[in-house]
Length: 206
Image (cartoon, rainbow, N blue to C red; front, side, top):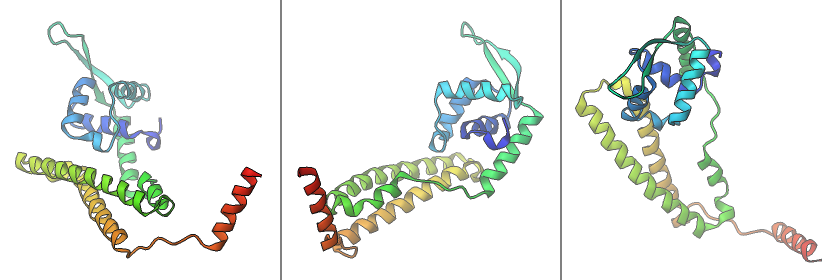
């Protein structure tokens, strides 16, 4: 596995192992506590599969096994020098490279005119309700991090996520206001569009 093919979850695992060796269950707990799922899709099955892949590539290795009472034995993993090199290379790429992203919201905005004013406004209002709730939750998390004294350098990803969501909320609120006020008017179908529609209808019913 080359550094460029490290998945986001693989990077997250190596990020944790930078701190100390740990077993997958502890990784999953820390990922929940640190809201890693805000930037990476974390599932138990995929986490264990990622750990196996990293081990197979020589990026991590077994350093210990532990047993807590009658619970199953847990394998503790640590990062290898090759893992550190791959992690650093991939981290530099992720931080410095510009990679095209394709948010689904952009495709939704592209069909606003086709949906029509009423339907578009209805769905955008639904989006605003969800965004307001998420922004409020984001603010609560940030307050908790600040009160805990967690150094900001450890939650720059969360800071970015909250800022982006707050921007989307403000931008979407402005869009809804503009659509309601007619500042962004909907165009009526012209003769050419009407003719195409009539021709299509004739072909279907002819």
